[in-house]
Image (cartoon, rainbow, N blue to C red):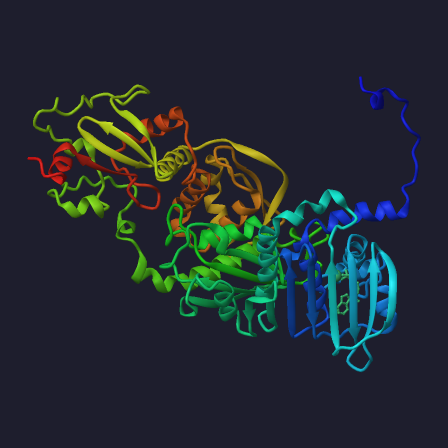
Length: 575
Ligand code: ADP
Ligand code: MG
């Protein structure tokens, strides 16, 4: 046992306020980008129409933010860096109605505690003054030169917190983080001009613009403005603007699926999913839309006071918002139905049509046509091969196929009876879950039932579908004329809120109800592209799908593509 551990416990002392403040400051300000975030928010709260950020050493040496906002009076300037100093709320009640980005009154005091800070400010009709603070202590206070607005310079960040000084070494990466914080703030304030300099050089300049213009200048390599469209949606207590990209220009990751609530960027998965869901028929596995959601919600309906950097938010009316967003996007996307729907969509899922396999065509290798691969009808004996495998019994775990591995983070490579198959792991798994859901399953009870908001038509659809829903593990109950979601299916992993909005969305298309519900739930639960599968899991998936008569996923896409030995031979010029 070490000496420290064996010595008697010390008695409890109340921390020296200066030490306590340093600890608390570290929670708000953990790296240069946090300073950039807080100072930008203050400038925007001050109603600035132009904001400039200057960084030296990625913010580790100097961060300077200059704005033309309303500035501070002499008394305000002398108070602004003290703990719990804020002009934005006074009472507990104000906290529920807050519209400004800041409200805790701890940003400047935290920055002041861990840096050398200089604030120069002048209200529109007053003379500029400047204060300097080092490690939380005022070192000078007097008149200064300057225009109206505020200039805050933060030097030597963490000079008195050695543990945080490590950042000094990584100025390039700190710059990148500062840059993305800067862009996040700029997107939600398109009418404000923003400039970011690093080492004196302008790195980003965003003139005042409309939303589409702001997004395309903030992400210059993303999409031309012509491919972005601004949509609107609204409901009780909220209004949404969505900048949606055309489905023909998808992305390979979710970076361009962004959500802003009351002008703050938040990481709200349910809303990201709402947008992805709206594009589901246009973009398949591994492709994501460009969609930026700017949601304005009555302050009373959201709570931002749940995360130190306000990156998280709690909503009181999420399902309704979810539904309106999906609908606005779906209405917009309908324009592309004629242009973009892949031909495979036309395939009815349930009917197994044994179409004749077309004669071999080289194009088929590169652009496999979506005709259903029906093995029973078509595994021809090939010269020199042992002929078609015995297909009288179902394939078991050691079935007559050989799994060769996973490629491109997506395809399972399979050899079987002189044919080569590339099986799309997501599509295949989706189909397996789809079939299981159709066969029914049990439900898992929710701790808190979720309210379903339905109109009279929806009400009768729910009554009619109730039995079918129960069969797949979704229990809904009617109480005093309103509906609640009480269980979610055990078979799939889906959030109750997401399922609720999905149900409400589908009520508007009762004809497709079951099929759409099964398809969406399977898509959410299936292994994603890029997921590494163990050999056993891969073999299990292959075993379950290889003998399907109509091997398409719930959206109608083929689950695999295949080539015979002849086709492969002919590709390399053998005969
Ligand atoms: P909060 O933003 O939560 O109120 P801060 O510590 O960030 O707390 O700022 C404290 C106060 O200083 C603000 O409430 C505001 O009155 C004033 N202030 C800070 N920055 C500026 C600025 N750029 N322009 C005008 N006033 C500012
Ligand atoms: Mg603030």
